[in-house]
Image 1: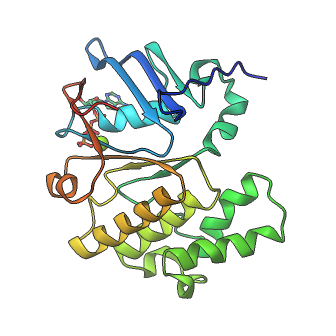
Image 2 (image 1 turned 180 degrees about the horizontal axis):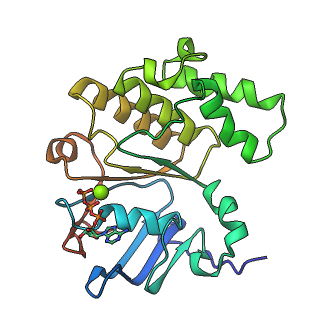
Length: 235
Ligand SMILES: Nc1ncnc2c1ncn2[C@@H]1O[C@H](COP(=O)(O)OP(=O)(O)OP(=O)(O)O)[C@@H](O)[C@H]1O
Ligand SMILES: [Mg+2]
């Protein structure tokens, strides 16, 4: 078992992510400097900031796609640096991720793309089709079940990617510039899905440099600039 320390704020909300004095260096110059952040369970949080600010790097640290150079990150009270490599898939069951470029598998159908997550998590064979249908209904794309991703529009592909991220009922959804390749209508649809997942209790963290998006959605915003994080509105 991994050591787990759960902390709560004054109103009894769980600290689902805690970031303490985190630095990330790729070269001699740090990409992220002394980042400190607490995210509460069921928060909707934006990470704003210009290109090159370190938003993607920060998100990658949260699902252990990258490791910190210094400092530490707790997810659900578990120190990510102490998770052995073979246990990383367990961490990832708690974290759904949506990328700007969708990252669906081209030679898999929509159904297969989504079912894969549940198969990898070892779910029972008879649960999988039921759950995949359920998330496809949520994103309004039941009819695309047997289609290949390349046949769908960008907006549809991103909604499938959201369905894939949500199918395992993760506690946390991370989205990196999720509307970067979408028009306004498709962006709104994707954000409606995030709002639905947020209502169901998911903690949502979205990185974006799209100012319009930031003005449209009610959420806490922290900004990154040249690797420094500024927290404007506190918890
Ligand atoms: N794997 C890597 N190796 C080396 N340098 C990297 C790597 N990933 C990111 N960087 C550098 O870290 C800095 C921050 O990059 P990052 O991708 O996190 O920014 P971003 O805020 O997501 O930008 P954008 O809005 O363009 O996506 C950049 O200077 C980038 O070149
Ligand atoms: Mg980025």
